[in-house]
Image 1 (cartoon, rainbow over the protein chains, first blue to last red):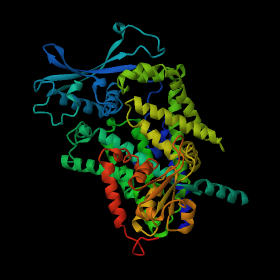
Image 2 (image 1 turned 90 degrees about the vertical axis):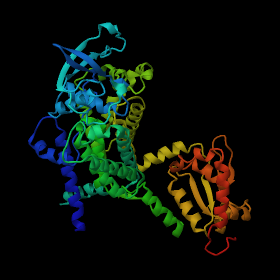
Image 3 (image 1 turned 90 degrees about the horizontal axis):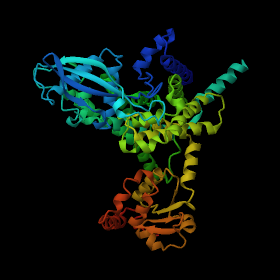
Image 4 (image 1 turned 45 degrees about the vertical axis):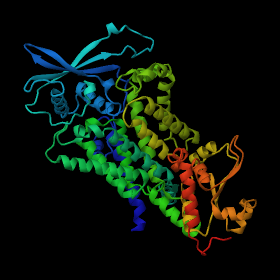
Length: 181
Length: 416
């Protein structure tokens, strides 16, 4: 058994390195399809590469609105800079998923987040609420010295998620600090 | 046939040559520290992010089960950090980290992915008990019994190679993903990140740092290229150090000034794990440049407690500054303590400090000697400032005097 140990370890390492590398390939290939379950099971999925191809100069703001008559009224806004730095990366990741939806579960996550905000924002139960992701583009994408006036910043509404405030109090704890709203 | 056996020999040397395990032990501790910092940081929001009634509702787990598993995660990470049952605590931590990553993938960023990869490597690698409390205890026991430490912990080379491959793959993917962009070549990427309200940790420092945007930005692809260049057979040793130092500096800067999750800590952990014995020796030489010689601890070799404590100090002597000498040994006494009063040596531990920069050589005894020694032993650094708190030195001297007077000796009375 001891004589077999080294060849077995070497074979496993060869498989592991091949599988991890194949799973990292962007285009689907036969080997990648074979390797992905192993990579997923062992936590070897390649992490997303941050700030690529360029860091995103788009700053999202999350505006929560309630239905009033035929229009919508702003009830609150999530300002990322006012969130604790410890929770900000997670919120940033959720936010990123909101405006670039890649995961079918995102919609549910956002809806849940929105329902959680009804009580702190004193929105009546059963009211229609929606999350509007607004974004401004920072004027430093190409040249640092390019200081465009703040008034002329491009503002874009990217995506809406709509839901109804739950009948009872939100089961969530007061997780996201009220100061963020 | 000879080609096959030569190839086999080379592969054997490549994967199984003995390698110092210290780097992997450091990696285990830093990996656990990075995970622990994340999960402690989001503790107030844990129920929302991962709980059964949180952002991703689940019927399979109850709230109490969730909190028990969260507590188990924190506890196992703390054990892996300090090295209590290092193998089992690391495996349990990795499985729980994996479970929480699966529970709400939206809460995790690139750094968490890298930590997951490192975690798996730690679970399968031998030698992760290096640099742990478990080993420190064994070292102290060994010194108590044999007056010598265990030989340096070694492992086969393959965990090191696997970690290096993880970093090279990470660098190659990052470089590939950057290529279509313009901000990295224009030197503005760092400025964008530093100005972004999601990322800047201290908005007040943004303008100061943004003026260094170009060199910071350009050093990122340089570091990535250096990692990829390690694929060249027999790369120059300086290339590995460039990759390590540049990545570590960038990670440290990112950790200090940006709120981008665990990526900086994961990169720092990987860089420390990839330090070889020669790198650590070079670092030690740099840090010890102003120290004229060894710090000599003159302990009582007939006292079991003294031997255990001396063994513990030697284990914590990561900077390789300390030499322990049994003052009851005539040779050691003649060499290190010829000018010291034997009765004083009997009463309290004496430590001889060499000249360090502008500070001349000196000999301290008792509590003051231990306090001064703590400055040179990194595991005791958290204790060092506490020993100066008013009242503590007085209390410390009394406790030390009591312990020294009541210590047990092999031959009954502690007399030379």
